[in-house]
Image 1 (cartoon, helix red, strand yellow):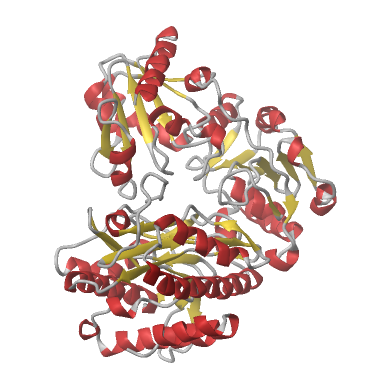
Image 2 (cartoon, rainbow, N blue to C red):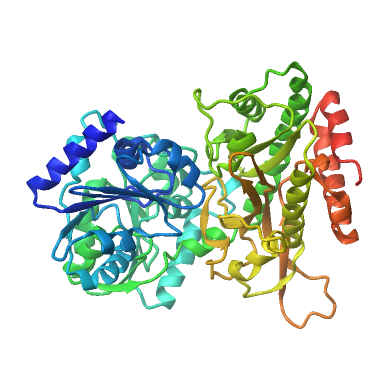
Length: 594
């Protein structure tokens, strides 16, 4: 705490030099990535918090830390209440706190590279009555006091082969060209590295868990692309892969390219929700005709082509085999009473690594025993590491990045005999999971309209969970991908080819956590003979047993029992040929009919 206190003091000294009354610190880099490289982990540096969602406000005499429901318990363990007021952002937002704590006429600074244009506009509206001045900084004051700051990443970039991508980069650029032409736009500024990676069929390694090369691009209506990237990352043969309609330029040339776009005096698309405020304001200041709208790559990227979908299926078959091998190992190892959260996590990674298409985890594994399972995004450390003991529930949320797909699966496992309450809560979560997995819905339905399906059986007895029910998933890209999702707020219509998670849960603070997560692809339903409109449904991709010991069978309807039995039969038939005799024996028992 003394080190954090010293850093806060140094930051306040730095702010005073520029007559700033406060400074905003988001969990972001200039690319607005979900996972930021070590060089951009300013929140961890300033507060000690290591989660992936956070926001800090530092004023002259106080500071506040905000995170969402996934990380509120983690924040209480990592963020000092003596140095920060800690809030769930679902209860109190940073702008609400600022209105209460900033005096009239205060000068509030922010780094315009780290906030989206849309977020700054929202903040301006929220603070309009306070007469607060929002001041963009030329240099981030945290960087001035961060003396051992890691260097920005420069991992090599490689072509993403057509056998996995399913479409050539030239085909994708032609698709985006058509979108721009139809909208009478001259170009689009692409600031999301995932969109650039998808568009150019490239992958890299600049951020943890996601094969992203951090870079910007501008695509013109004729399909030509200027790609702005650190030249150290460019590998031999990459230009040949890209073709002659893609020009590679150093990242430092990007601001000048924005100025040039403005001079052309033609409409330019940029996404204000995903682009740094500095980029939008530079275009605006140069006189560009801005078309503020969604990144044109986002929707085509989310709707997987047939090759990508088949790759996702293959990745999940192999991932399921790794998980089954792990679960069989776990049951045998528990007899020795030596399994801990960390060595269980390491053992699962060992099984995944045996596959030659595996390239690493898709996120930091959540391996939580007992009360740790109630911390939605718990991360086991040497200090917190706990043994798996009888009477506990063990929550394991993990995933892999494979060349042909990305996986994300959660299973809750009974260690010893579960209590009646555990079985009740687990079965309510399972019923919600089945309801969402089984639903058929008309084209145009949004995730917000489906979210309650997964919560209904918890709501019946006054329970709920503080996270979305599902997120979009990329194809050997981000394990969290927009625009689709299943949550109370997501208004994006689900489309064929999208992949989303189905992960309702229940969490009893200090005691246990429950979550059942499968990934599922949106597919067209064609067997409805009386259908009067185009209908969609879900194809479950994840293949791993659901712990039968936690199912209160009498709480299930006949239809729900058949769903579990059918799913388990499919898991058995698909995974059995991939595992050894010991794992087959365990799998046969784990998937026997209810």
